[in-house]
Length: 278
Ligand SMILES: [Fe+2]
Ligand SMILES: [Fe+2]
Image (tube, rainbow, N blue to C red):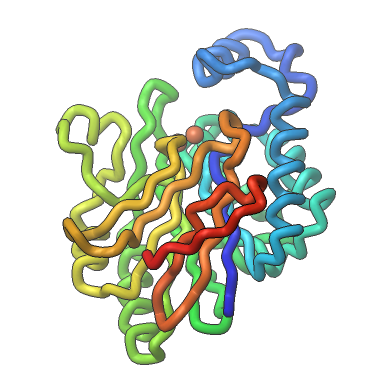
């Protein structure tokens, strides 16, 4: 049985962020508003959660975005270092970018995948997939270039077409399809909030989720753990983990069975395991 570990919203910082001046300093203060700007605490918290995920015995790890606070090169180096220290083999890790990961520049994520995150390009680059027993995982970028005052996302047309193709293929094979992405697929009920913070083409992705019951989404962005069904009363297929930067129990685990994900709803550190069909 394949087990997937899920962590999200690390918001890692560079150690010498105090040297920032001008616009970069202001950007960091704005983005970290209400949260301590403590690089070492965030790094320690990330490492502890990554080690806990390894100790869980999960086959694969998914990190669903806002991996850094504002997507600077030194922050991606911190991410690469903490992943290396955790001992997770890059072939067993899928990374997806969040809105925070491209505030420093629209190509920040692509440059990171060619730089410090190069070992993860084969599992996390555009169009890449990972096939495990009973499941296919795909990283889906929702990161778009925008000012720091906005936190929306969108999936590129080409990526949506790839998801549709993968959905058709996995439907035939009987595997679950798991999409690792930052923004939740569902539309905000308030239009202005959707424009400001939502997935702009949520309607297209929700249509795919409506059409294929074997598609599941692991996401972040809301910073709160949640299990959400595609249709009212149906089992949940969209799962969010608590933000690692805020939470003390951010790790979630899922098991793959008969083309579906089963979510573990228990705090792993409590030592109690309860599995729920999802
Ligand atoms: Fe976040
Ligand atoms: Fe976000």
